[in-house]
Image (tube, rainbow, N blue to C red; front, side):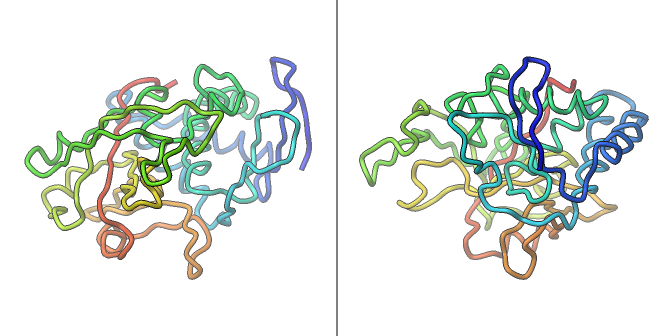
Length: 263
């Protein structure tokens, strides 16, 4: 665990865990040699490779929870939660080297790269506005995707804003019920797609999703690569998508696909 200043002379906290600056630079050197027929194909291959380097990294709940006077950029690779795992993979896929990773992470985690709690991309659907993703639920399941209009960060049940420093967002997005996920829909998923477990019930009425991860295709099988808090895992793992869909607390999925901002 150490502190340093970034290119904007802002303090950052870094805990690399089993990673090191040298190891990250080697990962990025290999990742940046990956080729593809176009930007999207290259991106998918990079996401697959970079995210695989996080397999078995420990799950750590609220991994950005360092007590400081104000929001600062935190790189916590010793343990990740579902959101920070995806953030780190996204930022690394855009980076040339370790120092570039620090800069790219700022823009992945925060709107316009402004390190401030109110500018943080707290919610899954923030990635549509700020990280170049598109909601593809309606595209891959035109007759089964359910349109949702929801106030994010406001609980109807409790009658209040949940994160006082963060604006309430009126969001429209789609989710697909678990029972409607047939083979045809599953086979339309691609490596690098982001999956969010749709937030249902009064307890989660202020959220869009409750858990996220990355789609990985291996041959004819589709896997959900995620930082799992389940006791039997408690780490980053690959779970067959069919197994994930069978979980009692998973009622539906929101699916995002990278469309722009590949660098």
